Length: 196
Image (cartoon, rainbow, N blue to C red; front, side, top):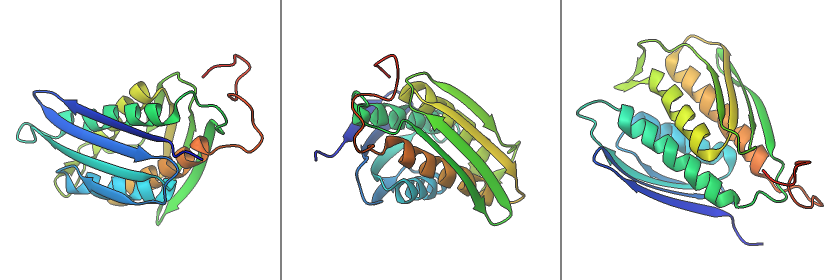
């Protein structure tokens, strides 16, 4: 069976990004975003979703990380959409309840083509290393908008900012990995409309 893959290149005055994704992968990652904490999160995404992920990016980090983080969300969403094609035969929905030490995160998503984000996680003013973790909401918003994904992320509780972010990314990975899986015997798309 042919591997489902997407590749997106985006170059603006603020960022230069290439994202490649193989949905039927083995969890391999080659990631260099120029933001070490995000590299770690994308490695978790690849491993826990069983995707192959390749990301190279640079940006105007002397301003701050906002442009690069948001544009990475745009590119990952577009690469996912490309890899899914017409979405025939996929499970469509995914969900995960994921513990990470003292944190617990719920993630549910629908590859409906209708972008919507619910993001309940408090990171006000917090940093992990040099990374402002409140930017994770901007990443997921851009991903949802450009991937056509309804995405609900609810961090139920937690203390450590690094653990909170890991719980979110691992839960997201597991839910997304479920949703893109091919359902044996399913014909067409999982929608009474006949299109996603």
